[in-house]
Length: 264
Image 1 (cartoon, rainbow, N blue to C red):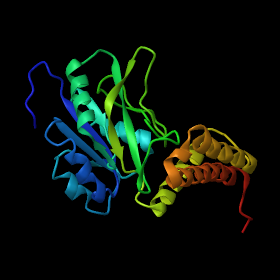
Image 2 (image 1 turned 90 degrees about the vertical axis):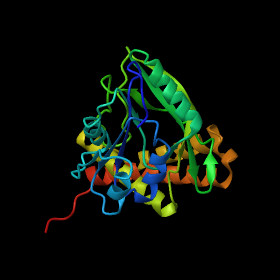
Image 3 (image 1 turned 90 degrees about the horizontal axis):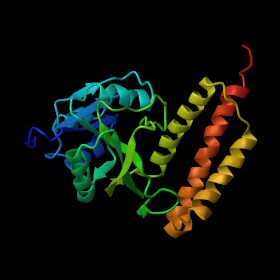
């Protein structure tokens, strides 16, 4: 681990994983040697994820009763002892430019400040710079005792209050978000189910008409308003698939709330 002066805050990287053996090594290599702590929380991997993780850290933990993305991140944060926490996903890579800005922010140690990173996604053979996907800024770095993620099952966010300052870090995290079309469909189906379950728990209902309306709006926004056509065929495909995913989550909620199986 790197040496620090007494006045330099410590930094942890935290990652929640499941069956990420193919991704995790490349992710952790981009933070190896300049962070003080690496915390991995696994939700029940059946591949070599643990073996890969233990090449980089002995802080490998398992919580295989899946509570949702937000609650799982909260559990992971409980294992962090460093002053600052940087969140990564296994399919993300920290670039040298981003590393420099992260180290600068930690060294500055500004009070009540959280930091957003930009993610540049590689999708179906191309970096997506339009479609509303870039710079895709998300809060990922903050003092460990200052805040934490919310309890959303999916699309979780760091809790940011009015008293906090939000600053953007320079540099990108490269995001290898989908391996192929099958991976996209499986991943989006999981998100759709979590979204529908969460809305159902809150007593929300919908219709197939709403699903069609929101799906069409999603396509027009990504491909036309967010100039996804500048991303070529990948931009068109991603806009179309996103519209499909939008419809699926509304359809899933409609099925949950509006349909019943016949009595046996």
